[in-house]
Image (cartoon, rainbow over all chains, first blue to last red; front, side, top):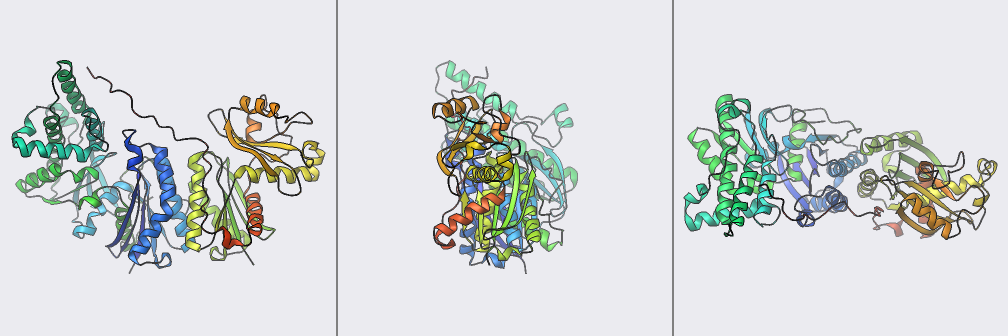
Length: 352
Length: 251
């Protein structure tokens, strides 16, 4: 029996969760997203201040909700990277105070590996190997996961903007609120409901790194910078001509370009690497079109698709507690009390 | 028996102390420009070992709440708050400049201060303690010496050294002796503020945080009274953030 408390503060969500032997007891999240909305993106110092204020109340809320006392904890896990330095620092310092005060082991874990591990809470142990596509506001990575407690190999990543970042930027261009993902998803769904599937290809936006030499050189990498510029040019041309911008059609066509590239590359990686399970995680995994297209393409290629429920796709403490729980179960050595934060922590380091 | 654990991460030092009443059991300090989060927890463990006490004997936690550079400052504050939660003990916040002012006053009373001619620290005199606020500014607060603890009279604030110097001159500070400025900020800008005298304390130490917190707990009638008052960091500056302007064209 082991009871692990996980803390996540790499961006704008203060997450504290409790996992007992691989089972999620509670996932408490305090978000500062509303404080960032008017700035059109996460402001690191605003996020760090919010983490400090939310930390003790969120720990208390998690324990009270699960009917657990802090003294019952067997281990503490915390995201030690990658992420915003100031934000990570609050979580790591809090986790160390818990570990020190309780005399229990501390595990500093990788945020990306935690996004993979969280799916074990919903769908049980991960097949080894598993292919993981992690897509969020800060990351777009394709990972070969041989053992999430020890061996994760990055195959590809974005060479410019993260997928979620592209959603935010296009939402702003279209006058939709931050964070942009849910708004674009909704606008696109409405367009499809009114005009049919064809609206997804109404505007031919580019698919970066998917053909010719680009595909050879960046087999599993993605790029959204060219797509973003292409959408901006399209909108500007309409505006310059005094025409109304068809926001739902732009949203649907843009979203289709993003999820087309992501699913194509993920399926390509599964086939070429001989992996029969694809896991999609990160905030963008909550996108309904990404889920639908991935399901369709995985079925066509005989690949099993695993996607955690939307609440576990976004940043939360559950993912950290889940990975901590797996590390404890695998008998991995804990981190030192001198643990630091690493804003650019490589995914090859599951634990620091 | 009581055990007060004090930490401060507001400045150039990460510092930890353990005190039992008026008796300082152990104090450590390391100079760090960054990475406070790595060092604080191991230092707490080391100070407790040096003091010969266990973490579950801690009866109160004190923390310097700045002002200071934000990321480092939060390390101390969140550590203190979470330790308070885990151990079920009160957490007392102390302005870090108040602690440095106490160190300065104690130094002035001591023989080293007398030798250096700390005449401006005689009872009833005002002096200013400063720390490095980066961005070519200093954090500061003004105090009046008296019996024991210096009394805060102005601040804390954050200003350019030249603006602080002219405000101090206008308020009649620094007309005698070696000048009224103490601490790291004065040492960084000696041409604008007066350089602190040789040997005077430059940085806050956790021992002084412990002494102040201990007295305040005693004054309010026991540690129970301090419970529920979360120490709040003295940021003194708003976050750097600007609302986005008009969209930039790509074509």
